[in-house]
Structure formats: C-alpha cells, structure tokens
Image 1 (tube, rainbow, N blue to C red):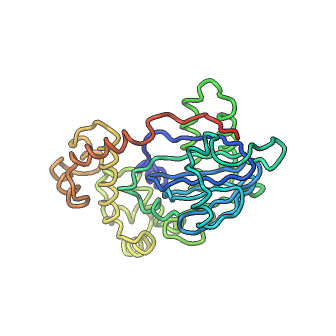
Image 2: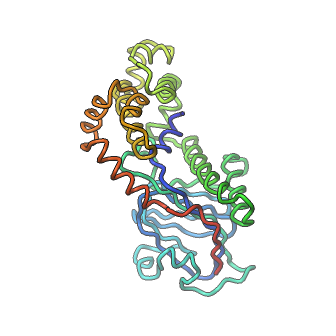
Image 3: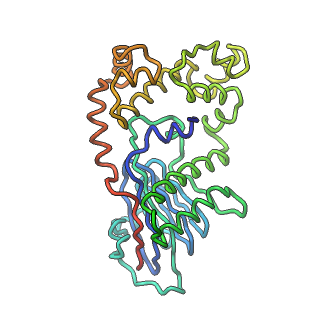
Length: 323
C-alpha cells in the first residue's frame, strides 16, 4: 500500500452513494454537515456552491468539486448569500427527490445536469493527509487536465445512466476510484500543504513508502535512512520538517492507526493484529493503543462496529432525479 491508499482506507466506511441529477428553473438546496465527503460533477449547465464557512464557488460544465470534510453547504442555480440561502433552501434529500420549490425545467432551457454523491468516513482516526485537504477541492475543467479523473467521470456517468448488468458491483468501485483521482488531482495542483510536499520529496517519500509497504518490519532510523539512500541525520531533518514528526514517531502512530483500521474492518484477533502491525504481543499493542487513543482495543472495536453499521447501509444508488 502507498500513503494515499492507506490514508483513504483508514477512514473509508460502508458504501458510497451517487445520483445523476437533472433539474432547472429556480432552486436552492441545503445539505447539513455529516461525517463523510461529498462530491459534485457538472455535466451540463452550471450552479453555485456556498459553504457554511462562507466560501462561494461557481461550477461550470466539466467542473468537479470534492468536500472532503462533510462541510454543510447550499447548492443553488444562482449566487446566494447566507441569509437568502437560509430562507430559500430546501433539504437536499427532498430536493433530490424532485419535491423542492421551483418550476419544472424544459429540456432545452437552463437545465443543470450533474453527478453528486457522498462517501461515509470514520473521522475519529484521520490521517493528516486527509485532514489537510481544504474545505472545498475545486477541480476546474481544462482541456487535457487530469485525464484519469475525466475518464472515471465518464464511466460513472454511463453506469448511472444505463443501469447496466453488474452495476451494483461497478458503481462502488467507480466511486472509490473517483475519490482517489480527486485527491490525486488536488495533490498535483496544490501550491501549499505539508503532504504534497512530503510525497514530492524523494527522500521523505521513499521512507514513507517503506513504512507503509511493510509496517510490521523491524524498522529503525538507520534502516529507513538506508531505504531512502541518505544518512540518518539527513532523513531525520527532511522527514521531520515535511511530515511534522520524526520517522519513528510517525511509524508508531501509523501502526496504531492501522491497528484501529483492522479492529474496525476485520474479525482478526488482537494477537493477529499485533503481528500485522509490528507489535510483539497483544499486551504490548493494547497498552500502546490505550495510551494513544484513551480506550482499549475491545471498546474501540465495539464503537467502530456501531459507526460502520450506521454508514450507508445501502449500496450505491443509480437513482436519477428529474425536475
């Protein structure tokens, strides 16, 4: 596993949901904050996004936007301020089902067509790469820009439109692929932030790749420096500057995050998990886990089971809302 894959896997819960929406006229809908990430991709027309933080984004044809922290927001046919949005907006799910206010659109006039959906995330143990994502990741359409992302959007739009055989398997996979490509696209465009810099630095990236590829290995500063092809002081300086913590401190933290993910997603015993994340005994893992998270592995597993059960119990939707 690489860092981006691990960062997403550590928080991903349940099944993503998605819709292909066609609407028009005057409309304004609000989605309340939630534990997850949402996305919009405009296929035709345009709309406006206003977050609870006050950020307004104009979305045009081909634009993709990711809200990685489940920020509450309003989406509307035209620019709105917070006061107007509070008065006009209908609940998003109600709007999605076609019962919002506004006249029915004619197919050839002021029609919006877009893909939208959400991912359920466990935000209690978030990797700093995910935490560093801005409130809104706006990936504006450009000819030749992010070809993998554009291909994933085309495939997803086709699956939602056609209800093809096997779509119940294809849709969740395409939605997960879309999330990866949106985060990857943000990283290539980012002009600031620790993690794009860390993964763009060959020394730090090599050490991270080694740790994430085999977290249970008996890593030491010397072994990590050798894997990165530099001296130990050079690795310590560059890694700590870019990641925000020394290599071995990061490794300890990541092993515990990985243990939490395995407790949540697998029925493995604590002894098995301890071996997979580099601890010599379940007692050693339990002690470190409680020190880091303030709860025992058993209690964490029980709490995580409740969160997972509540997260999107239904598979990805192929519903289309026409208004």
